[in-house]
Length: 195
Image (tube, rainbow, N blue to C red; front, side, top):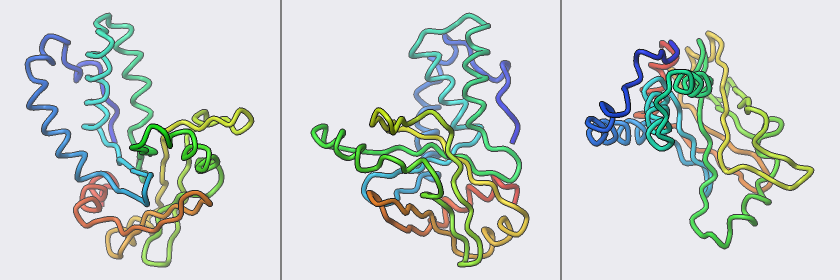
């Protein structure tokens, strides 16, 4: 998938004018790219459109207009765009009750280490999630509520993903769940995989 380029990012004033309609469209797109796994894990599968929206929103929130800083943000967010044969997701640990945040995050410590999250395809393929480092610190007992994870597919896995049921699985003492990836989400992800 092609990375975001500077010329694709709307200047702040132009973005403000188009933001409301653009935002509604992206919210609808994200609905078709999100999978809830258990009570607290929500995976948003990223693509060029979702990443460009995040860039635009960050520039807006931080009032960034200098070209060098805009390019820096583009470079950071481009890491979220999946490469060839990959799916890329942002994992949100969602906790509605503020009183339960620390307890829940403590219980989920280590979710991003080892093979705790994967995509299972038709009982024949398991594609482990590869987490970006630096979002938890077990020594200090800190776990971020946001993680970035990639799933790398080979040709056989892509074929299986197209033809068979696929499941998103979490297998951690604090979160065990196996959820079928809905057809609407799967159709969107197949586009990412070029299948």
